[in-house]
Every structure is written in C-alpha cells, then in structure tokens.
Length: 256
Image 1 (spheres, helix red, strand yellow):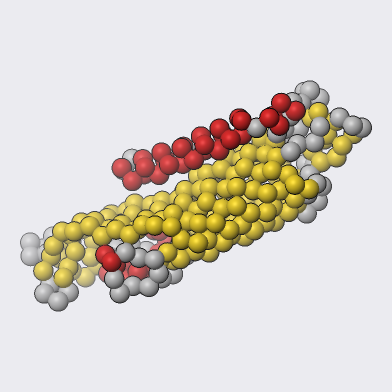
Image 2: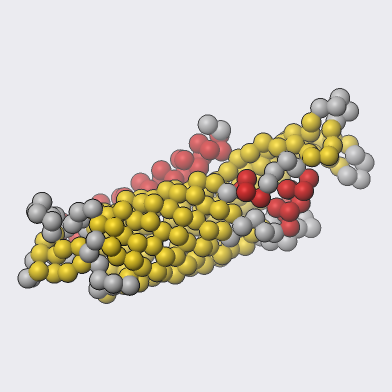
C-alpha cells in the first residue's frame, strides 16, 4: 500500500471514529434497545451509517485534459474507492437532518506518452487526487420508515426509499511528482506540483434502507457532488479543478 493510500485510509478511519464518538455520546441510545422480538421500545430518533463504495470523478476541467493528453493516464484513473459515514437526526416522521463525510483518493504512476529522455528511458511521474466532502443536509423518506404499535413498540418498514440534498465544503488535493519536460527547451527536470484547499460543495442523493432487524439496516445510495476548487500557483494558467462526480455506496445503518 502506498503512502498516499495509507493516508486516505487513516483519514477515513479518523472520520469514522469521530462520528462514532458523537453517536456514543447521544443520550438517545439509552432508549433504542430492542427486545429481540422484532420491534424497538419507541421510535428511533436518528441513525448512523458507515459506508463504502466507488466515487467516479468527472475530471472535466482543463488540468485533467492536459494530464490525460500528455501522460499515460485516462479520465477513469481519477475515480477511486470511497469510505465514510453519515449521522442522521429525525426532525419529522419522514425527515432527517444529516451530517456526512467521505474520503476518496487515488494515486497512480505514469509517463509521458510521446517523449523519452536522452537515455531512451520513459519520463516517469505519479499523480494523486483526493476529495473529502463534509456536508450538512436534509433527507426526505418517500414512505413511512416504520409504524408504532401502542405507545412503546415500533416496527421498521422493510424498504424505506429516500431522496435528499446537502451543502458544505470539500477538502481536496491534486499532486504530481517526478520528472517533467520543459516544452520551451525540451529539458527534463524533477519537481513536485501540489494544490490543496477547501471549496464550496452541493450534493443530491437517492437511496433505500433495507431493514435487517428493528435497529439495523443495509443502506444503498447514489449521490452526485458539484464542486470546483481553485488551483495554486504551481498550476498557473489552468481553470478551477473539477471536484464533481457520482458516488455509489453500500452501508450498514444503526438506528438509535
């Protein structure tokens, strides 16, 4: 595993641990116990989901076009696995306020397509691209998530589809390191180019919860993120970096 991949995993684990700590501190957990007979004592007040899946990068800006034209990279190489979590709090019977954070990152070696060095060797470098959106939004269920029996028992609906929207910010980093060509002199030199920061972000999503018990569910979700980030002076002359893309995930949900 590369140093970049280990960093992505560490960020995802720290993110998940932080969200779990918030969940553990919630007093609502004391009222979320089920009796083993298919129902909970009282309707849930929220949920926590750990998820993983695949994040497709749109990679539509001119820096991606330049990179894929000059180097042995394809647009699809900027897509990557994604990991993260979502914390929901119910504000109405079918409406949740949600806080989510995910991390997606890639690291890939490449070389110039049409150039070699003076020793007839490939001119090699590596490219890294990471996105970490942190979003606050609203999730609207399209049908009841469960039903109450009497004053205490609550039974979940087997399938609960939902849609939602969120806004926030995306932390991003684009880095290239290795050997490059000065196209004015055709000289080969070693360098590292890096750009990172925060950018505004918006997201829409649709998903479904499949209940596997009174407190637990499997959650599948598709979400599309819109975001563009400014580039540092290392990439002067290029427009904003496209951080948008579609992600599909599968998660394990715990109601509390």
